[in-house]
Length: 177
Image 1 (cartoon, one colour):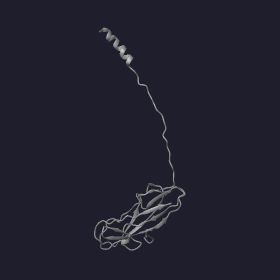
Image 2: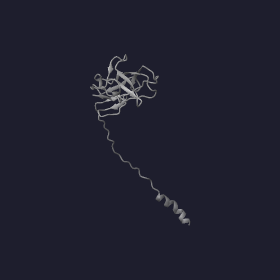
Image 3: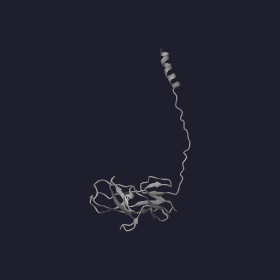
Image 4: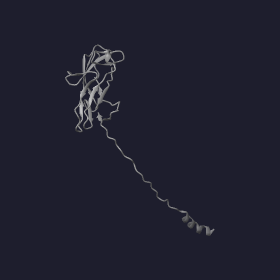
């Protein structure tokens, strides 16, 4: 028995082993393809982009018997739609149609609650004298620096004695270059 105990340390040291370190190396491919494009309210847009949020137009809470209410298109953090494009790009902003335009006078847009309509118009000046109608355009200047341009749109809603409730519309817009 004594012999076994004496040999045990010798056996244990002969079976101990140390893990060999191993490593593998390789590469990561990195690339970017820069194309002419624009950033709209902080969102990247290239020539096939859709669903970009150009902003919102909120007339707020007003009495159902209002006659006129002003509002401004808000593109996110500031008044207006902020556009920044690649150098050499000269974009054109086109204001499309709304969902209920045929329910009010030509050139006007309409918000609906599902059965009634409230007429509103869009303008390019704060005095609301220069109206922009469906498929009207706003030309921006050529981008030569990394300075954003702002498209300011002003609105006026025209009320009558309407039913209280929420009225809404969605306007299609396009920025082309």
